[in-house]
Length: 329
Image 1 (tube, rainbow, N blue to C red):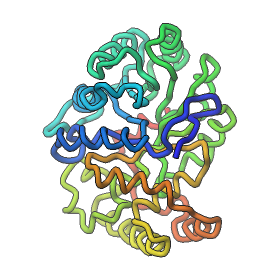
Image 2: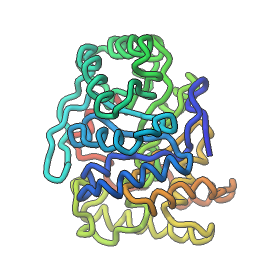
Image 3: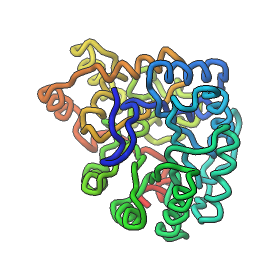
């Protein structure tokens, strides 16, 4: 299944591949299996590969560079930049300040090109909005990179409706990457209507709420990586949200699909201008996610899901409080 990214953007796979977990963000990295997963995605025609230069300090880009060797024309590379991080054990990352200054972006993009072993990036996106740099300056620098042929399309991530409008006034913005799932629907009030008005596509990350909606976690102790620090997966919140997962499991059984497939299909059903990038580092999960595109949700199905899982029902915020200030910039 292919969809156009934005009104005048490229044709990309509706279900892309989020590659962050391949560099240790969620448990030990498994390079051989990760490379095989990327290769399988391309083989199946799912070309949208999402990464960032700060995923394990460039490791993720190097991994993708290996996987797409000889297959560059089959891949659509989405790269985020500008989020400064401190590397932790096993590739874990602690977010730090944001740097979206023009000089930083001009340097960062060339390091990404080197690691990816390519001479252009399809979609280049500041990972967060820099509160110390007018977004007009950031977009202006990216527009220069488009003019030079270094990048092809400009993206934004975790931006407010106001910021999106300011950015789009400088240069066309092709896509907004932001969290959107059954459990994260706050963009529906202002952000989603704004990008639709402006012809900007939505790249929905974390459609499975970092794996919770797959139904694989049964108790907090099952989470042994950075997700354990997120409020939704802690203590009483965990068990309240687990009850919601059981509702999803029941609905999925009626549609003859897995809970993960139902959750991804729900995101895709919210509009033909939406693509989603569930993360995976194993072929079996990749193939399960891709099969979500074949799950047809009727209006009655969607109404049933909304009745059981209305917006705002999830317990706990999607990030720890100290990181919330970097969102909706």
